[in-house]
Image 1: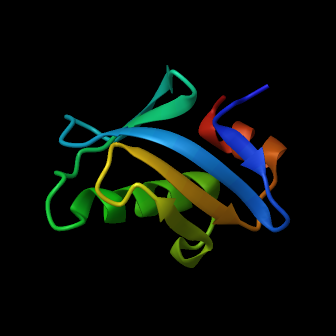
Image 2 (image 1 turned 45 degrees about the horizontal axis):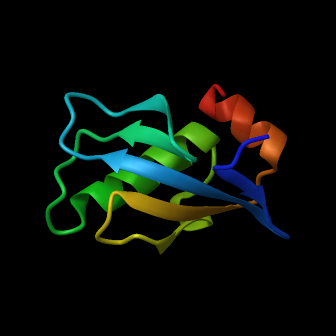
Length: 96
């Protein structure tokens, strides 16, 4: 069971731990009950949040409009909703 991934009526929600300002953008693994993602973008003027949405959309094969930041706009711990994808396809796309 994945504590960081939950099914919703129209997709999934992901609990993430973000490390901005990294050398490259990549999925690292688990950080407690969250999936850890390193982002190359700095945590300035929403650049890291925009980079996260772009990375998730590309990785999951979804349009950016299908990815919504639900909580954690200014925190490392974020909850993101992805519409139009199920748990199985999310795990496969993220390599988990």
